[in-house]
Amino acid sequence: MHIVFLGAPGSGKGTQAQRLKDHLQIAHLSTGEMLRHAEEEGTKLGHEAARFMHAGQLVPDEVVVGIIFDRLMAKDCERGCLLDGFPRTVPQAEALDGMLAERRTPLDMVVALDVPESLLEERLLSRGRADDDPGTIRERFRQYHDLTQPLLDYYQAKGILRRVNAKGTPDEVFDRISRVIEYAGNPQFAGKSQS
Ligand code: B4P
Image (tube, rainbow, N blue to C red; front, side):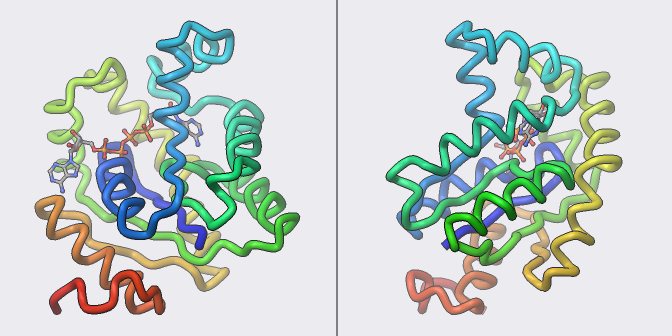
């Protein structure tokens, strides 16, 4: 099973993907985490990515696509994976389609987390990561609107977009996501969520 988590900065992609991977027993691929790890390790890639992340900008497509391509080839992704924060642009989505078509493993679902922007800013400011200061947050929202939001139409047209209200506690949001996945016929969730 291949699932993409889509949402604005701070919408809870990482928070929810972490929970879901334990239920589905599939790999969790977070491009944000991979890039921050590369920065901590002081690699050339990390150094280059940090310039963009600290400015609130997206890292260039070819860099992120290269990382995901290598990671998708790993053994732990054979049963599928949860993509958290990738794709974030239409060219990234097209590259993912190409990669999955080569493996003959279609993308099953795109879960879009909907949260009002005022709440997002509050969450990010209280998280306090290096890229969470007010100026950087504004730029990250701008990039989201310009480059990532068009993916909602992209996946809607493919019929695999599922929008989830991501306002509320992490438990409440997880319950809604579980229902969406259960509805799509995943047996791991049968009987878990209440309506
Ligand atoms: P990411 O690491 O993906 O970070 P994010 O969008 O800020 O956060 P996320 O939605 O995962 O929110 P989280 O669960 O942490 O990206 C960071 C940067 O990496 C990007 O800006 C970009 O530069 C680069 N990058 C990553 N992928 C890329 C790509 N594909 N292409 C190009 N560049 C890329 O939650 C946020 C906070 O809210 C946390 O403190 C959490 O505890 C809290 N929270 C979560 N759910 C909550 C809830 N329901 N209620 C209250 N608080 C909640």
